[in-house]
Image 1 (spheres, rainbow, N blue to C red):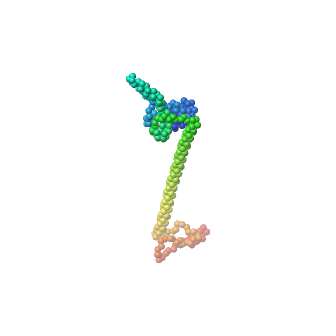
Image 2 (image 1 turned 135 degrees about the horizontal axis):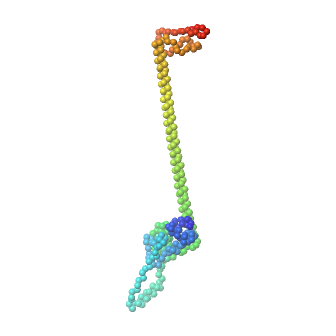
Image 3 (image 1 turned 30 degrees about the horizontal axis):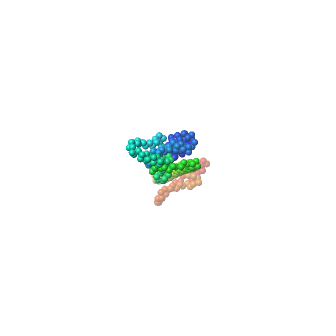
Length: 285
Protein backbone atom coordinates (compact mmCIF):
# COMPACT_ATOMS: atom_id res chain seq x y z
CA UNK A 1 0.00 0.00 0.00
CA UNK A 2 1.60 3.26 -1.18
CA UNK A 3 2.02 5.88 1.50
CA UNK A 4 1.89 8.60 -1.17
CA UNK A 5 -1.60 7.50 -2.25
CA UNK A 6 -2.76 7.41 1.37
CA UNK A 7 -1.32 10.89 1.98
CA UNK A 8 -3.06 12.18 -1.14
CA UNK A 9 -6.44 10.81 -0.06
CA UNK A 10 -5.99 12.14 3.48
CA UNK A 11 -5.15 15.57 2.05
CA UNK A 12 -8.40 15.46 0.07
CA UNK A 13 -10.40 15.03 3.27
CA UNK A 14 -10.57 11.27 3.87
CA UNK A 15 -9.68 9.76 7.17
CA UNK A 16 -6.70 7.42 7.33
CA UNK A 17 -8.96 4.40 7.85
CA UNK A 18 -11.16 5.26 4.86
CA UNK A 19 -8.16 5.90 2.62
CA UNK A 20 -6.59 2.55 3.50
CA UNK A 21 -9.93 0.78 2.99
CA UNK A 22 -10.50 2.34 -0.43
CA UNK A 23 -7.01 1.43 -1.63
CA UNK A 24 -7.35 -2.09 -0.27
CA UNK A 25 -10.70 -2.69 -2.00
CA UNK A 26 -9.44 -1.31 -5.33
CA UNK A 27 -6.32 -3.49 -5.19
CA UNK A 28 -3.89 -0.65 -4.43
CA UNK A 29 -4.12 0.65 -7.99
CA UNK A 30 -3.81 4.30 -7.03
CA UNK A 31 -5.86 7.33 -6.05
CA UNK A 32 -8.09 7.43 -9.12
CA UNK A 33 -9.64 3.93 -8.70
CA UNK A 34 -10.16 4.64 -4.99
CA UNK A 35 -11.99 7.88 -5.85
CA UNK A 36 -14.12 6.08 -8.42
CA UNK A 37 -15.03 3.46 -5.85
CA UNK A 38 -16.19 6.14 -3.41
CA UNK A 39 -18.17 7.86 -6.14
CA UNK A 40 -19.96 4.63 -7.00
CA UNK A 41 -20.57 3.79 -3.35
CA UNK A 42 -21.86 7.14 -2.18
CA UNK A 43 -24.05 8.38 -5.06
CA UNK A 44 -26.87 10.59 -3.91
CA UNK A 45 -30.37 9.29 -3.90
CA UNK A 46 -32.25 12.38 -4.97
CA UNK A 47 -35.55 10.73 -5.89
CA UNK A 48 -37.22 11.17 -2.53
CA UNK A 49 -34.97 13.77 -0.85
CA UNK A 50 -36.10 17.35 -0.45
CA UNK A 51 -34.09 20.51 -0.92
CA UNK A 52 -31.57 21.04 1.88
CA UNK A 53 -28.79 23.39 2.90
CA UNK A 54 -25.21 22.47 3.70
CA UNK A 55 -25.90 22.55 7.44
CA UNK A 56 -28.34 19.65 7.04
CA UNK A 57 -26.26 17.73 4.49
CA UNK A 58 -25.24 14.17 5.32
CA UNK A 59 -21.48 14.03 4.92
CA UNK A 60 -21.30 10.53 3.55
CA UNK A 61 -17.56 10.73 3.04
CA UNK A 62 -17.22 10.58 6.83
CA UNK A 63 -19.99 8.08 7.54
CA UNK A 64 -19.71 4.68 5.89
CA UNK A 65 -22.95 3.56 7.50
CA UNK A 66 -25.02 6.52 6.31
CA UNK A 67 -28.58 5.59 5.59
CA UNK A 68 -30.34 6.65 2.41
CA UNK A 69 -33.01 9.26 2.49
CA UNK A 70 -36.29 7.83 3.69
CA UNK A 71 -38.89 7.10 1.11
CA UNK A 72 -41.94 9.37 1.44
CA UNK A 73 -45.07 7.55 2.59
CA UNK A 74 -47.53 6.72 -0.13
CA UNK A 75 -50.94 8.18 0.69
CA UNK A 76 -53.79 5.76 0.47
CA UNK A 77 -56.44 6.71 -2.01
CA UNK A 78 -59.70 7.69 -0.36
CA UNK A 79 -62.92 6.25 -1.80
CA UNK A 80 -64.47 8.61 -4.26
CA UNK A 81 -68.07 8.91 -5.30
CA UNK A 82 -69.05 7.20 -8.46
CA UNK A 83 -69.81 10.45 -10.24
CA UNK A 84 -66.31 11.82 -9.57
CA UNK A 85 -64.41 8.75 -10.75
CA UNK A 86 -64.03 9.89 -14.37
CA UNK A 87 -62.61 13.25 -13.28
CA UNK A 88 -60.03 11.57 -11.08
CA UNK A 89 -59.08 9.24 -13.87
CA UNK A 90 -58.53 12.22 -16.14
CA UNK A 91 -56.28 13.92 -13.59
CA UNK A 92 -54.29 10.73 -13.05
CA UNK A 93 -53.83 10.28 -16.77
CA UNK A 94 -52.68 13.89 -17.10
CA UNK A 95 -50.15 13.55 -14.29
CA UNK A 96 -48.81 10.35 -15.75
CA UNK A 97 -48.20 12.09 -19.03
CA UNK A 98 -45.88 14.69 -17.38
CA UNK A 99 -42.55 13.15 -16.32
CA UNK A 100 -41.52 13.92 -12.75
CA UNK A 101 -38.40 16.02 -12.33
CA UNK A 102 -35.60 14.03 -10.70
CA UNK A 103 -32.65 15.71 -8.98
CA UNK A 104 -29.48 14.56 -10.68
CA UNK A 105 -26.88 16.66 -8.90
CA UNK A 106 -26.24 19.12 -6.11
CA UNK A 107 -25.69 22.75 -7.03
CA UNK A 108 -23.76 25.32 -5.04
CA UNK A 109 -26.03 28.32 -4.62
CA UNK A 110 -23.02 30.59 -4.23
CA UNK A 111 -20.90 29.78 -7.28
CA UNK A 112 -23.26 27.58 -9.33
CA UNK A 113 -20.99 24.54 -9.59
CA UNK A 114 -22.54 21.09 -9.89
CA UNK A 115 -21.52 18.12 -7.78
CA UNK A 116 -22.43 14.48 -8.07
CA UNK A 117 -21.44 13.09 -4.67
CA UNK A 118 -21.38 14.23 -1.09
CA UNK A 119 -17.61 13.87 -1.13
CA UNK A 120 -17.34 16.48 -3.86
CA UNK A 121 -19.74 18.75 -1.97
CA UNK A 122 -17.75 18.45 1.23
CA UNK A 123 -14.45 19.00 -0.54
CA UNK A 124 -15.79 22.10 -2.29
CA UNK A 125 -17.28 23.48 0.94
CA UNK A 126 -14.02 22.91 2.80
CA UNK A 127 -11.91 24.62 0.17
CA UNK A 128 -14.22 27.51 -0.74
CA UNK A 129 -16.18 28.08 2.47
CA UNK A 130 -19.52 27.96 0.66
CA UNK A 131 -22.34 26.61 2.80
CA UNK A 132 -25.49 26.79 0.68
CA UNK A 133 -26.35 23.88 -1.63
CA UNK A 134 -29.52 22.65 -3.31
CA UNK A 135 -30.69 19.85 -5.57
CA UNK A 136 -30.56 20.39 -9.30
CA UNK A 137 -32.09 18.59 -12.25
CA UNK A 138 -29.01 19.33 -14.29
CA UNK A 139 -26.78 16.35 -14.73
CA UNK A 140 -23.10 16.74 -14.17
CA UNK A 141 -21.18 15.33 -17.04
CA UNK A 142 -18.85 12.53 -16.15
CA UNK A 143 -15.18 13.27 -16.51
CA UNK A 144 -13.44 11.83 -19.49
CA UNK A 145 -10.25 9.85 -19.10
CA UNK A 146 -8.25 12.86 -20.19
CA UNK A 147 -10.04 15.11 -17.69
CA UNK A 148 -9.46 12.57 -14.93
CA UNK A 149 -5.77 12.41 -15.74
CA UNK A 150 -5.61 16.18 -15.81
CA UNK A 151 -7.39 16.43 -12.45
CA UNK A 152 -5.04 13.85 -10.98
CA UNK A 153 -2.07 15.70 -12.42
CA UNK A 154 -3.23 18.96 -10.86
CA UNK A 155 -3.74 17.23 -7.54
CA UNK A 156 -0.26 15.70 -7.64
CA UNK A 157 1.19 19.06 -8.63
CA UNK A 158 -0.58 20.68 -5.70
CA UNK A 159 0.77 18.03 -3.34
CA UNK A 160 4.29 18.52 -4.71
CA UNK A 161 3.93 22.26 -4.23
CA UNK A 162 2.78 21.78 -0.63
CA UNK A 163 5.63 19.36 0.01
CA UNK A 164 8.09 21.83 -1.48
CA UNK A 165 6.73 24.66 0.65
CA UNK A 166 6.92 22.46 3.75
CA UNK A 167 10.53 21.52 2.93
CA UNK A 168 11.42 25.18 2.41
CA UNK A 169 9.86 26.08 5.76
CA UNK A 170 11.72 23.24 7.48
CA UNK A 171 14.96 24.26 5.77
CA UNK A 172 14.47 27.86 6.85
CA UNK A 173 13.71 26.80 10.41
CA UNK A 174 16.82 24.59 10.45
CA UNK A 175 18.90 27.50 9.14
CA UNK A 176 17.50 29.81 11.80
CA UNK A 177 18.24 27.24 14.51
CA UNK A 178 21.81 26.82 13.24
CA UNK A 179 22.32 30.56 13.05
CA UNK A 180 20.92 30.96 16.55
CA UNK A 181 23.24 28.21 17.78
CA UNK A 182 26.25 29.86 16.13
CA UNK A 183 25.23 33.25 17.51
CA UNK A 184 24.85 31.76 20.98
CA UNK A 185 28.25 30.07 20.61
CA UNK A 186 29.88 33.33 19.55
CA UNK A 187 28.25 35.21 22.40
CA UNK A 188 29.41 32.58 24.87
CA UNK A 189 32.95 32.69 23.41
CA UNK A 190 33.02 36.49 23.62
CA UNK A 191 31.72 36.41 27.19
CA UNK A 192 34.33 33.79 28.11
CA UNK A 193 37.06 35.88 26.46
CA UNK A 194 35.97 39.02 28.30
CA UNK A 195 35.92 37.10 31.57
CA UNK A 196 39.43 35.77 30.93
CA UNK A 197 40.67 39.26 30.06
CA UNK A 198 39.12 40.62 33.24
CA UNK A 199 40.71 37.86 35.33
CA UNK A 200 44.09 38.50 33.67
CA UNK A 201 43.79 42.22 34.31
CA UNK A 202 42.98 41.59 37.96
CA UNK A 203 45.95 39.20 38.23
CA UNK A 204 48.33 41.75 36.68
CA UNK A 205 47.08 44.48 38.98
CA UNK A 206 47.53 42.18 41.97
CA UNK A 207 51.09 41.31 40.93
CA UNK A 208 51.83 44.98 40.38
CA UNK A 209 50.56 45.81 43.86
CA UNK A 210 52.61 42.99 45.33
CA UNK A 211 55.75 44.27 43.60
CA UNK A 212 55.10 47.78 44.85
CA UNK A 213 54.57 46.47 48.36
CA UNK A 214 57.79 44.41 48.16
CA UNK A 215 59.69 47.43 46.87
CA UNK A 216 58.38 49.60 49.68
CA UNK A 217 59.19 46.89 52.21
CA UNK A 218 62.77 46.63 50.92
CA UNK A 219 63.12 50.39 51.06
CA UNK A 220 61.85 50.42 54.62
CA UNK A 221 64.24 47.63 55.62
CA UNK A 222 67.14 49.35 53.90
CA UNK A 223 66.32 52.64 55.55
CA UNK A 224 66.07 50.89 58.91
CA UNK A 225 69.45 49.23 58.37
CA UNK A 226 71.04 52.53 57.41
CA UNK A 227 69.49 54.16 60.44
CA UNK A 228 70.80 51.37 62.70
CA UNK A 229 74.28 51.69 61.19
CA UNK A 230 74.29 55.43 61.67
CA UNK A 231 73.10 55.03 65.24
CA UNK A 232 75.79 52.48 66.01
CA UNK A 233 78.49 54.61 64.47
CA UNK A 234 77.33 57.68 66.33
CA UNK A 235 77.20 55.72 69.54
CA UNK A 236 80.67 54.31 68.93
CA UNK A 237 82.12 57.71 68.21
CA UNK A 238 80.54 59.26 71.25
CA UNK A 239 81.29 56.64 73.95
CA UNK A 240 84.49 54.79 72.99
CA UNK A 241 86.54 56.85 70.58
CA UNK A 242 89.83 54.96 71.40
CA UNK A 243 88.46 51.52 70.53
CA UNK A 244 90.48 49.83 67.77
CA UNK A 245 88.88 49.17 64.45
CA UNK A 246 87.83 45.60 63.95
CA UNK A 247 88.40 45.52 60.21
CA UNK A 248 92.05 45.58 58.90
CA UNK A 249 93.07 48.50 56.77
CA UNK A 250 94.21 47.48 53.27
CA UNK A 251 97.85 48.20 52.37
CA UNK A 252 96.90 50.35 49.46
CA UNK A 253 94.64 52.49 51.55
CA UNK A 254 95.57 55.38 53.79
CA UNK A 255 96.39 54.59 57.42
CA UNK A 256 93.84 57.06 58.55
CA UNK A 257 90.18 56.19 58.48
CA UNK A 258 87.54 58.80 58.00
CA UNK A 259 84.19 57.96 59.53
CA UNK A 260 81.05 59.34 57.99
CA UNK A 261 79.00 60.96 60.69
CA UNK A 262 76.25 63.45 60.66
CA UNK A 263 77.64 66.85 59.83
CA UNK A 264 78.48 68.86 62.90
CA UNK A 265 80.64 71.80 63.67
CA UNK A 266 83.81 70.60 65.42
CA UNK A 267 86.59 72.87 66.72
CA UNK A 268 89.15 70.07 67.21
CA UNK A 269 89.84 66.52 66.16
CA UNK A 270 91.97 63.57 67.16
CA UNK A 271 94.04 61.31 64.97
CA UNK A 272 95.10 57.81 66.00
CA UNK A 273 98.16 56.06 64.62
CA UNK A 274 99.52 52.60 65.28
CA UNK A 275 102.45 50.48 64.23
CA UNK A 276 102.38 46.98 62.74
CA UNK A 277 105.33 44.68 62.00
CA UNK A 278 105.42 41.96 59.38
CA UNK A 279 107.09 38.57 59.53
CA UNK A 280 110.50 40.02 58.51
CA UNK A 281 110.52 42.38 61.44
CA UNK A 282 109.96 45.48 59.41
CA UNK A 283 107.89 48.07 61.07
CA UNK A 284 105.17 49.84 59.18
CA UNK A 285 103.88 53.08 60.34
